[in-house]
Image 1 (tube, protein in one colour):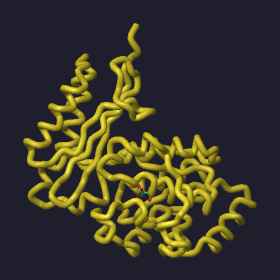
Image 2 (spheres, helix red, strand yellow; image 1 turned 90 degrees about the horizontal axis):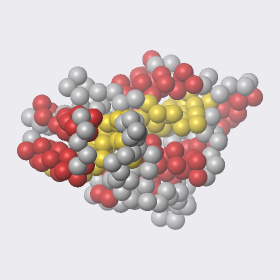
Image 3 (cartoon, helix red, strand yellow; image 1 turned 180 degrees about the vertical axis):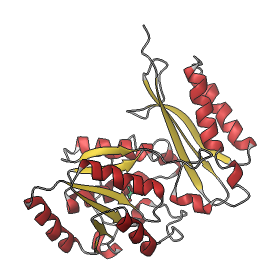
Length: 286
Ligand code: PAF
């Protein structure tokens, strides 16, 4: 695997690949790679000839009181894992390379409405930071496809919408959630879960699964289900942020006859904010 820190040298090598008719894919990450990231690399390899993984802890998507400064930076072990997975290129730029004019006056890409709901409510500006850096990475790499994990369902939906609205010629591919044996979705932030919390940390997944079972067996009082799930999370000793039953495409609160539903949730442990989601298809009414 070749490692690049600068835009111009990465562009040079990618334009050679394109001249040879190779399809280029990108897997954007913030590093601290685990099995779920490697699964995204494997998914990308199925769809293209050359895979670029990017590692950049993007300050623009972190709020002032969030964990940018303590976000784990593990470049050495990350590059070993990528190498082993057969990733072709790693792009890991310094902040100056991505934001040469600073961040305050940086031109931004924003997907209104979708960015302000769910996680966007408790993390104002977060998704603007995500779409801005992803748009920049797309412009730098000009990939044919890009792979994003379904665990960050709202991010995936917003990136899809950005690419569609701005006519970006990039196919957005969804990578499955990878879970620990007890159902906890793999995340770089799981390292912040305390040992004493860990046995209960799958509560978010349990509560979202419980909602899906209720809906599948005919329950349609979505508000009551959301409230009950939040109660379950509180009773297990965590602070719920939100639990919401949504239309999978628009992320608006689901209507009772929506066929594609996603149940999304977020909760706080002592030192981490965890997110998860489960999608279900309902037969349209006869
Ligand atoms: O999902 C992430 O790790 C980040 O939000 C992303 C897509 C790499 C943008 O910084």
